[in-house]
Length: 362
Image 1 (cartoon, helix red, strand yellow):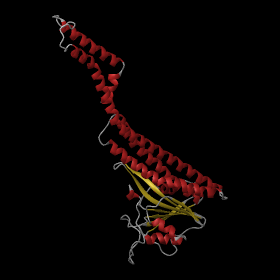
Image 2 (image 1 turned 90 degrees about the vertical axis):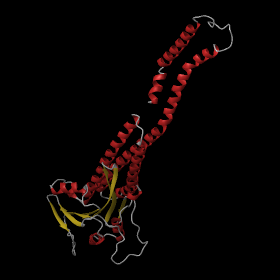
Image 3 (image 1 turned 45 degrees about the vertical axis):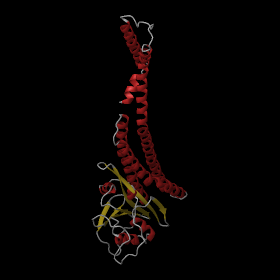
């Protein structure tokens, strides 16, 4: 699990003139897509390389600058320099593995999040670091992979949908973050389905590697918790400061995002409690089974206890024992022993002791 939080340390070794302190990324060439929005239409332009003064920003329109691929340090810094972003902010964009962050600069808001997904085949939560900077009339986004869920937001804009998004960069920022939070809910839903399957198998009496599977799922939920819990703190602090400002629309949008985050965190806590209870149940099942075996053996021994008494009593070396000299004494004693065993068995059966102990053993 820790490798998904790991980031490359900087400053430990002296780098050569052509070396970067940031890790190399996937094998695609990063590029920039610029969406220029207003209330009526959307224009799109792609930049594979940036010249001076690019990407172009049209005054009076909302501009979404989407940097696809952060493993090209020169491209990321060129975009950041064009929009006047701080160098420390760009360092956070380039170095993956950070905790979620919301920082309010003088002229923009910087948001760093984890985009989470669920691999159905490997049964594992996948994470991608994405960054978002919202300024006056523009929104910058940085992503690691070539395609992610923001493609759906872009397609809706290209088709002319989402007029609310085109009103201001606050609405566009809200739409992009909401898409991430919606994906959190879907990821938790897929993970919850696997957890419920394991729970049903555990209640049905499955053994084998089920405890190992529970601990594997618990690590995935712990990864989710560590990826999402910092949002609660940073959003709470940020929204408190934003509510003191004059922009009531922005404060309302951020409050809506905070409520979505709380919903996601509540779902994560629910999954954690379910897995903790499943671990406790799987650990106590062997003990309960041993108790059931002991109860069953105790009932069997109790049934045969009167028979042992009768056999021991008539095994004494006395000649005047009842029925000992009679030719039918053996049959009488055998009948008494059989009646005693059958009577006690029926008594325990009617008390549901034998049936409950037998079911627990299975």
